Length: 386
Image 1 (cartoon, rainbow, N blue to C red):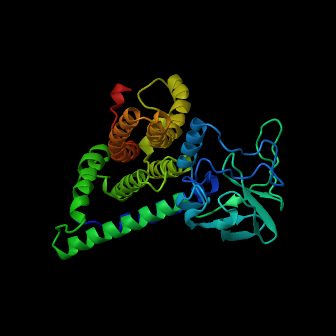
Image 2 (image 1 turned 90 degrees about the vertical axis):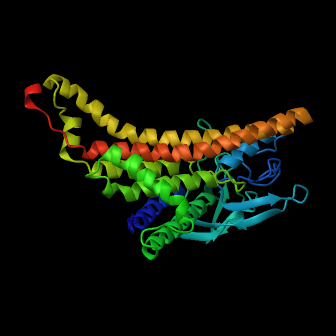
Image 3 (image 1 turned 90 degrees about the horizontal axis):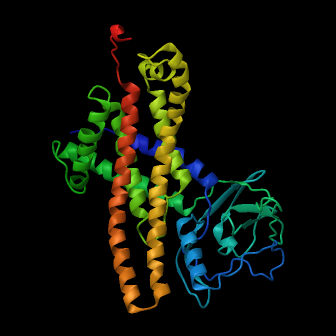
């Protein structure tokens, strides 16, 4: 088997497609920030009405920590000293477009406690939604009385967040792995070596059990690059989410939206005339029914990628929430029996989450292959049956 260079081009295409969508819409909150930290002191000048206050009871603290864990962040914080409040990690670049380009380090926010200044503009991270808003030197955020949403100007955010770093890491890892696999085939006469031996069976499985059965022998090759890319891309991001780094890329709706859009575009841009004829003028049914079925079939074109987006997002996001909730029971029970049960259950659930990481990558790839197969399927209808 020979692996072409096409997967590398699709990796870059996937990366480019995801980055702007993700960076614009993400909620960036420090996922490892201590739940007892107060982002703005209630007495600090410029705080809006109903300022963020410190959770007082154990359950509220745990709830706040879980919320921070599943959201994105402008910096990587590995740990912190609860006594001194010192964070150990590194900041990430903030890139804003607000009547011009603004680039500065996220360290200016001091983990959400300070106002950042850039070229005469002032910005602050809102603790209710974790997004960056333009403000004045006092850091005041004004909220709409009816909706409760901030009325401050929100700049276009292209920042390199923790999720972006994980996407870059996954892309670079894939480029290295599959470049090495392709080179090993060239050097060893079609025999994989090194790390390629681990991934070769997976590549063959995707080809023989997903691509060919669902797309067909005639058309599967032109989709193989994308199917391989999307499988390993989702898989690596899912695995990253199980590490202690607090990365939750595939549990972010904007990421799954970007991936679903790619499948949607490839499906509809490569579809043949039979695919569109079955949507707008379905053969084999009365003409009156065709008029009724056409808008339903057209709606299905958009429902398919929507289901891809929601399925991946909901499973990964819910898994993180459940796992963190079970772990938090150790701090609620505060007894060796309850803590032992919580630890054992969280360990089992962690193993299950590894299975879910593989399963969701498989499902996303399988459904994409199904959509591609329906787009290129060649129908031969006997007019006598019409």
